[in-house]
Amino acid sequence: GTMSSVLRLSLKERQQVKLNQACIATLDPSLNVESVATGGFLRSLARSFTGSKFFQTVVQGPGNLELASVIPGDTRAISVTKGKSLRISNNNLLASSANMAVSAATKLKSIVNDSIVQTYVTAEESGGVVWVGGFGQIQKIQLLPGQELQINAGLLVAMEEPFDYELSRIGGWKTTFLSGHLIMLKFKGPGTLYTQARDFERYRLLIAPEIHNHIELKTE
Image (cartoon, rainbow, N blue to C red):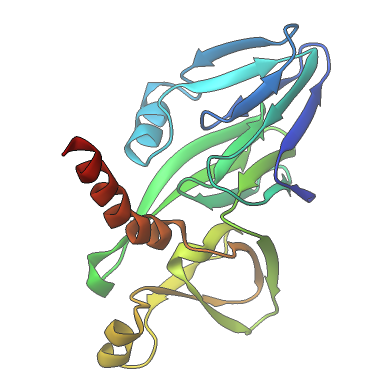
């Protein structure tokens, strides 16, 4: 795939792209934009419970548009072959080609009762493209058969099916809580995954008190 902070797309006549979040920066007047419940009511409802939109915005060509993720960082294109799926972490899915089916799932395991919210994007009829946004740089990691890797749960952007992970921790419980790394994802190859340089949720928790204090000062 290619990486840049702004995604620029040029759509041909009747060519479509589906947007998963409010990410339009610029667009030509010739483009047709509408919101639809793609994939039926149940699939749309499942998406809404995992942070994605019930209605997806569909843009149809001809014309040019620019998309920018709400998360500051790279935008990367990932190709998905026919019959294959990509599991994308919540808030990272930016857009997909029109033939991609988008559904949602939540994975819950035992460590501190945390849940990993992900969106499934599947190329059902033919190959397609998915665009993801990352907090900082997006890195592609390919694990060889038997190769193991642990990553911070907040850094996972996407992974190719049927690749999967187990929830784990660093060392014993004392080390886990004192280090601040509560949830780690343990992968075992072969497989391909994509990570981002920074954890958006940890950043949100870091600045939340400052925002709250700023609001209190303005209201006094």
